[in-house]
Image 1 (spheres, rainbow, N blue to C red):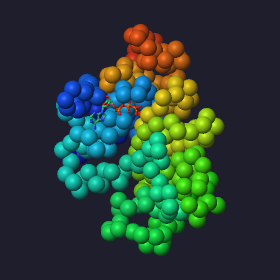
Image 2 (tube, rainbow, N blue to C red):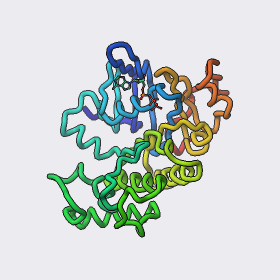
Image 3 (tube, rainbow, N blue to C red):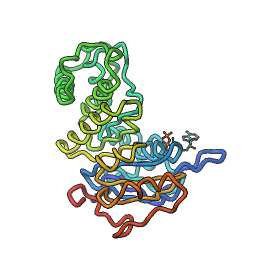
Image 4 (cartoon, rainbow, N blue to C red):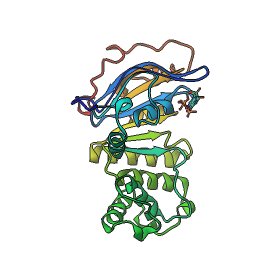
Length: 271
Ligand SMILES: Nc1ncnc2c1ncn2[C@@H]1O[C@H](COP(=O)(O)OP(=O)(O)OP(=O)(O)O)[C@@H](O)[C@H]1O
């Protein structure tokens, strides 16, 4: 069910339990306004991927409510969920490209959600899709590599192709699950800078999980910190010191923000 809302993403008292005994996300409530670049920080196993999967409907909450673009994800029918997923681009740590396909064909696959039937080979895609895919490859600086096999690209290049693939479906939201975890520091910065630039240009709402505090504070408008599935930090990045961000990894309780955690406005413009 879709209802108008000021937020692109809203979680209310969300809990995700995996039998027999894992509570991956516990009592999480948060709102993200349009155009906000949000970073999820937390140790391995803190629930970041689970939260991202709740947002794109791959998991349903055990308790609570997840709303994306006004739609209650758990209540959405199949066609509503399909429509919603077209508004959500995904980028993964391991790129998930088809190595034997050309770069351009990989980007075209981003449009599969809006096409009928299977596609095999670049020319099985409509010209409009191929054109759009090439435009996105140009944006990520890889148009010259369009006919190159994806598995011959560097890791950083493969992740830029994956970003282009996510953009082909013209998403409103981009979910990136540790997009730089497999990359060296220089490629990591390139990919983060690329995602931030495109998010700004396309007014995308981004949720990006990261392990690196420096990158979170550099690129995020807003940072959510998770520990054992609980939200222990929620503030604008400009209010967060390195020490405070690091505290989510340690034993100490999270230091409260000067203005109070969670007090941050949630639209990108307000941050
Ligand atoms: N499908 C599942 N079935 C059972 N347990 C799961 C499932 N998915 C995640 N978990 C568990 O939930 C907890 C949170 O996992 P999650 O992958 O969300 O953490 P994460 O912060 O993304 O970790 P990482 O940084 O290593 O990717 C972990 O204990 C994990 O083992």
